Length: 388
Image 1 (tube, rainbow, N blue to C red):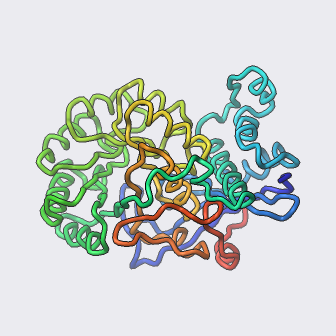
Image 2: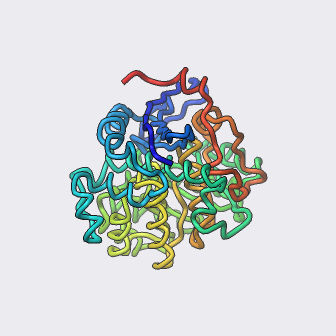
């Protein structure tokens, strides 16, 4: 299991105009991801994803450069089975020997941001590789699944007040027992967001879980007003109500309402989640394993959630690789009870890999294939890779 090579490619797949949607990120015309491939001396390969943005579109050139020129030289010749050691090598850089000998971190400057995202993709590929080497699913490497099946919720909901009811009931007609819709600055006013949520609830009825996601775009007063005005809608959670850097403001919103507050898709490493706990700012953690530090860091974040009685609902909006990583973590954690399922146009989830990914009657079965259980299609990679 000696690492022979590590490579990263930026994949950018256009979304047909009729399948594009508009949110606070603008019109999303492409889906982008960084595909990481680790090859051992005996030819075994593991795959992972690093993300340049929490949404679908993002410039991945810097991630490719970081992985090829910073992380790859550190890991060539190393034993791929020593995942935690390799994580510390990447996180601490030239001071990794201090970290490993003294039992505490000496991180490089890039202890947040794209460097951690790059580490995430490499770490994810290492777990995939180990699972394949042992002919075992990653969820089993994490301790095994806590449940045989888990409910998935449909993640979408961009339509205006006149069409949102039809859009969300289209999701439930496919068997989903919960749906998530977007709100916030994309609506122009709090009143418009409130009207869209009420229309969605009216269409869904009282028995379907309804989540809302503001992508961190409300101010604190706006978020508090929104909570007051949708109180009767019985929301399952309110996601990223305010800017991710404003933990105190998020805590203020949480203290003002009994709607559960969820955060985490924009956070890096266990240390960000530790600070969220210290501020009492969240009821639900949503780490993105292609951003937060990979499967290794995801497991540490899950342990924090389990310790502090916080629900775990990984952010699974990405390619098939980050989706399966998030699913594996959710199944392996007692705190994970629901899975995000993208219902927008997502070629990286449905077309990138050879395997089929689906939610049958709104349920997802525990992963059973070795590693992450998905394999990139070479023809897709060749067609959509960008030269950087």
